Amino acid sequence: GENVEQHPSTLSVQEGDSAVIKCTYSDSASNYFPWYKQELGKGPQLFIDIRSNVGDMKDLRIAVTLNKTAKHFSLHITETQPEDSAVYFCAASYNFNKFYFGSGTKLNVKP
Amino acid sequence: GAVVSQHPSWVICKSGTSVKIECRSLDFQATTMFWYRQFPKQSLMLMATSNEGSKATYEQGVEKDKFLINHASLTLSTLTVTSAHPEDSSFYICSARVSGLGYEQYFGPGTRLTVT
Image 1 (tube, rainbow over the protein chains, first blue to last red):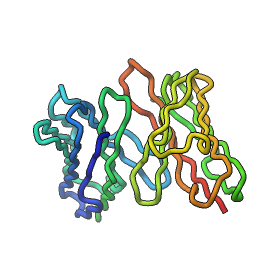
Image 2 (cartoon, one colour; image 1 turned 60 degrees about the horizontal axis):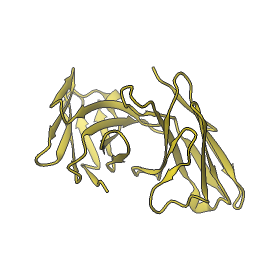
Image 3 (spheres, one colour; image 1 turned 45 degrees about the horizontal axis):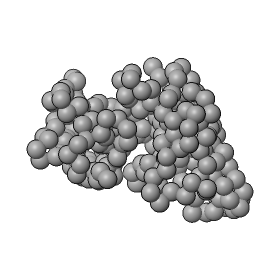
């Protein structure tokens, strides 16, 4: 089955700095790569996603990149704000049937 | 937007009893629902996939007789933890998806189960 690895496990940045979280996956058939944001005691919420036929995605301060050859994808948050503090999970899926999650990154944005 | 609810949000039960957790899609019909388990400071582990009207498909290592899943309607799936033990204590999260419409999973808020 698919194996998704995520780094780092914790990330502390100063407000206004950038944060980068990286994930690798093992199954070359995976074609959907969502990122979820989870706040304490709540379920994950879709943050941003990328599909392998779309290429890089960007939305204001958030960008995701995908390298299918190397089988890794990453989340970039620029101009971080304290409200960005949360746990972020990457995931990989083949045709949206099953989602395999990374181990999570706890992002702490210090004001 | 699509909303998924879970009930209860937290439950404490005694060892040996059974607990039922409900997962509802409030404003859409979910042909597929997923059940996850999450340990503190760890990732989500897929337990099973359920499609409306058919038997759930369990992931390897998940006991189907212990974690009973029923997806009786397009808006409701239930997870019953039978004969609960302290090691079953965890955060259980469901998600729902509508096939053919965006494929996005919508997660519920989770249920914290504590078995004493």
